[in-house]
Image (tube, rainbow, N blue to C red; front, side, top):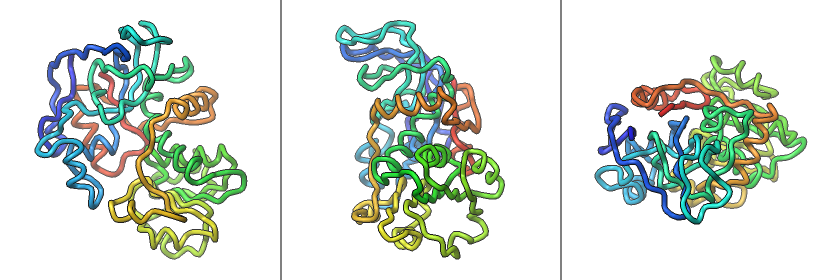
Length: 315
C-alpha cells in the first residue's frame, strides 16, 4: 500500500510517499481503508521534532530520539472497514467508520489497523472528509470546554485562536452549550468566526486583547499564545484558564483555575460530535484537501500558521 513516510525529522519535504506493507489486523483490530485523514498541528510537531517548550527531550523519547519511531504519522481518519480480527464484534466489511489511532499513529496511508474499541460508525450525513477533520479539534475542544471548563448556559467564553482546528469547534460547541462567545483571530477570518456563532470577534493583530478590561468565565487558548499570567488577567472571579497547547512549565503549574494536559480519545465524545454534525449543529471547516502524493503541501500549509480549520488528505 502507499503511505506517507517520515524517516527523519525536518521540514515538510522530508515526507515521502512510498510502498509499505499493508498492516495485518490483530484479533481485536479492524483493518480500515482510509478515505480521508487529517494533517494536524500534532502531526507537524512530530514530523519536525518541534515540541512545546520543555517537552523536547520527552517528545523524542516518546516518538523517536534520532528519527520518528512510527514513520507513518496521522491519527484522525475516516474510511471503510476492509476486514476484522477474530475477536471483533459490531463491525463488518463495508461499514463506514472513523476514529483516532492515538500514539500508534499510522493513518497517513491507504490502510490502517485500529483497535475495534477505538472506532465508531460514521453517520451517512457526515462525509469522510468532515469526519476526519472533526475528531482531533472537536474532541480537544469538547474535553476542555465541557469536562475541564464546565461550560454552560450564560457562561462567557473567550476562544483564542478561534479559526483553527480546535478553535472553530470550540466557538460552535460553546454556543451549543449556551455560552456567550468571544473569538480571537485575524481580521481576515473574523467573518468566518462570526458565522460559526461568535458574539464578538477580537483581531489579535491590533493588541486589543492586551488592552481589554473584559473578563470571562472561561478562557480557552488553542494556540499556545497565552501565558498563565496573561490568561489569568482575563478571568472573572471563579473563572478558569484552559491551555490546549502548553509548555512543560505551564503544564506542571496548571492547577486550581488553570487546566492543561493531554486529551483522552473517547469514542463517546466522537459519537457526540458526529451526531451534532449530522444534525447540522456543527460545521466542519476545511481549509484544503490534498491527495496523498501532495502531503508535503498539506504540511507546508499547517506550518504556515495560517490554516483555517482543518487540512485533509485523501489516500
